[in-house]
Length: 317
Length: 60
Length: 208
Image 1 (cartoon, rainbow over the protein chains, first blue to last red):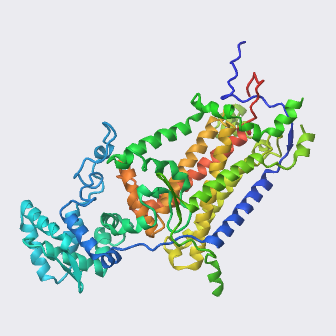
Image 2 (image 1 turned 90 degrees about the vertical axis):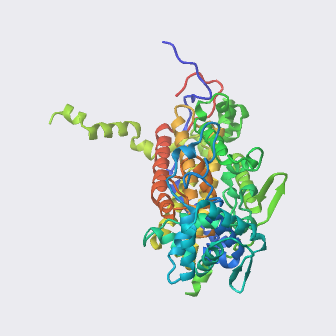
Image 3 (image 1 turned 180 degrees about the horizontal axis):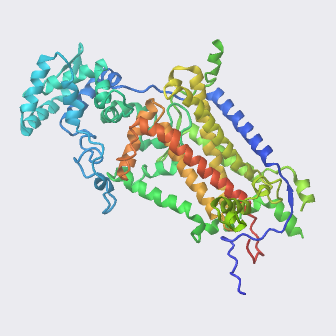
């Protein structure tokens, strides 16, 4: 009868040694008590962070110009969301990894039209606004080319835009209904009504904050706050937490790739890094089957520290 | 309900964190402490003697 | 009923299979090999204990809903317990992973033990992520709007939307804890069935 050759990195030797008493339930109980005690001590000492959520209301009151310029970019579809592509719209083909355009292939599943969803429809919901209604009618009746020209004139004047005595002041001319629409949306935002309009658009009960979150993230206000807390992608932000709290140190490798070329300047960074991490994760998962890698423990001999008592007893014999 | 205030953190970590910057590496003090603690814990687990040696020797 | 009919029953066959693979003395042993003599071995049970505290504190948070902790000192304290037990969970799990790697703990038919451990690790990262975006604060807003780009790039964002609080919360409190508990359970059962991996032996010629 032939016997398979013993493979030291795959097979385990037959243990012929002794056994000592072991109280598994006592060990488990002690472990739970120790972990509970540590948790209590850490919670009492350090608490946990709770930076308040920002609303469109807080954003538009704190940074009305940033809000207004973002609103204009939603209206002309040039915002990050407006030009995102799948799963929100078809404005771009999205990220790709070689020939793989997975984002595009999956398609639009969470349709967002920033022009209507973020600007026109919320404005239409405001009651008793005859001047606004007239401007909205002008907008609806205009051709795409005309709207484009209005928006171009408005955005060209943005560097000189100011906010004074509760009003948006623009020097834009030949911008059609756009200045009134943007100012009305800013006032709507500052009252808190836009937060509600974006969330309850699909009914009374909702737990889906896709629209307000996309709108907020299109502006600079949220990312400015995040940057102060070292949370942005180029600050290893994925690993970090607000304040001085520890974050997610276990995401160090995922975060690492975003800091180095070519990923730190690539438009396809997300899918490329997702691909790398998927391969590395599969490598970790299937480590027992990968020759070379599975030999590292035996070759580095760290095990001699772990089992030193066993080797002292058996190698003496 | 004054005792509830004792549940608040003794040393809340809400102030902006301190970050160490070395070339492209940027790490928070808190995360660095956690990582150092993990390595120290691992090395301690390897090197610290485990109790019950006599009992195990008797059962060898 | 004849004996052979009883033996053919699903219940009988499963019971005999379980009894064979995991008799009571293996499930709840009272001895262990003398080579289990290192502090590195405590990190498995420490990870399991941390998971129990994570779930327990999560259950208390669930009693009063996802917004409770913002306005209640007691709720904020429970949230702190939940955060720190999660930090301890990942801390002990990674030290456990390092230990098991250097022991090459997959040897002797234990590759499934290694793999269930890895999948539990990945599921835990998912559970942590969905937890962060369920906090209903600035952190949730930032993390969800950033993570959506990575998730969307893989085509998954169309079905797993980090900006949808309801979905993320339900993944966090139902689906992922279930996955973590089932995977951890399988992982621990496998350790009980196969036993703790023996030390390397340079003279070994025959395996288990």
